[in-house]
Structure formats: structure tokens, C-alpha cells
Image 1 (cartoon, one colour):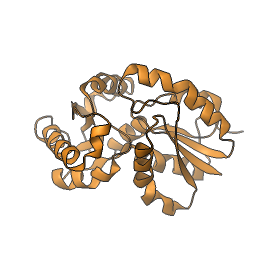
Image 2 (image 1 turned 135 degrees about the horizontal axis):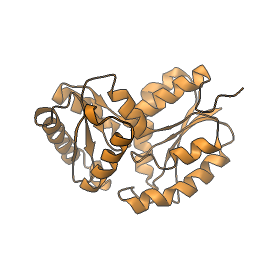
Image 3 (image 1 turned 135 degrees about the vertical axis):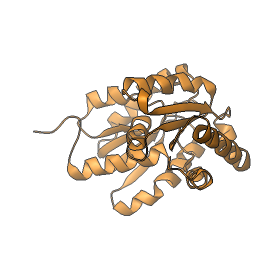
Image 4 (image 1 turned 90 degrees about the vertical axis):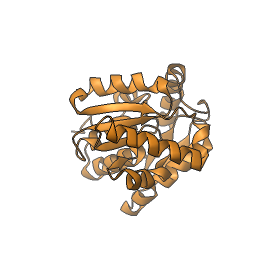
Length: 221
């Protein structure tokens, strides 16, 4: 039985990043497998991408009959509500998990987005969870998904953006608003001196807890 982490983009590089992100959690002993959605776009950067991956991702999830749980590894949380309607196994979206984790690590969290167009979706998600009073703000790197592979450029931009959220917006917790960049988390945290959350790590850790406790959104009677 396996916990499946689904990358709804077609980028194998992003999936490899997910594998690196969850490596510290492998020691929990539960099998975890990361999958790439072949039908997905190279990166999920706009609403059309988000809408287009839901149905193929649901088809993939239905085929995984040995699943103990699912994590959808895109910060827009595509298909999470739909998948929860179809299964009693734990289903976590990485954005929802990261926001929940942020509440336990500080008073006001900031989100580092990839593109400016992502920020309205983040604001809507924060508002829908009733967290406006805990939200310091969101700032964008203005980098594409492919640009994140340029380590020096990506790290420099992440640190400068994180410092703006800390110093100008008052964030005392940071969330990396994209899957597959966990390799930068510890360095951003060290540079800013405040807790920094990788959303995939948060979601996988929460799902492993749900699996161990036999707890889900649809309790089995």
C-alpha cells in the first residue's frame, strides 16, 4: 500500500524535486511514490492549466487501487475537492497543508509566489480559509517554472523576496508557493531567520499522520 504524490504537470524535473522534498519523510517507513501527470502542461501557471489537469489527474488517481492516500503537488490544489468526493482515503493539497502548518509556526505568514498572476489565487485561498488576519502578504519572484532550475538566480530571488515579506510586510513565517523547490527551503530559512515551509513536505507529513491514525474526511464505519 502506497501514498501517492501526484505532480499534475508533465515536468519530470519537478517530480524529481518532489522526491527530494519528501526524502526526509521516507524514514517513517510508509511507501511513498511520486508520479508525473503525462497529460499535464509543463508548468501550472494560469487558470487554464489549473482547470485542464483536474480530469486527467482524477483518472490517474482512480487507477491507483493500492493507494493509502493522495497528495496533489501543485500549490493551486487542483482537484482536491473532487478527489475527496470519490475516495475515503486521505487527500491533501499542498497549499491547504502549508497554510495550516503556518498557523502553528508563527503569527503572520507570507507566501512567495512564482508569477504575479498566482497571487490573486493565493489571496482567494487564504480568504476562503478565514485566514486574512494571519496573512502578511504575497510577493512574486516573477520567474517561470523552468527558471527555478537556475539555482543561483532562483535562490537570490527567493531570499530577496523573503526578506521583503519579513521586513516590509511583517511575516514571521514563509511559505514557498510552488511544488518542487524544497532544495531552497533550508537556505531561505537560514538567510531570513524565520520558519520556512515547503508545501509538499507539509502535505506528505500530514497525510502520513492521517494514514497512521486511520483518519480521513470520510471516516469508515
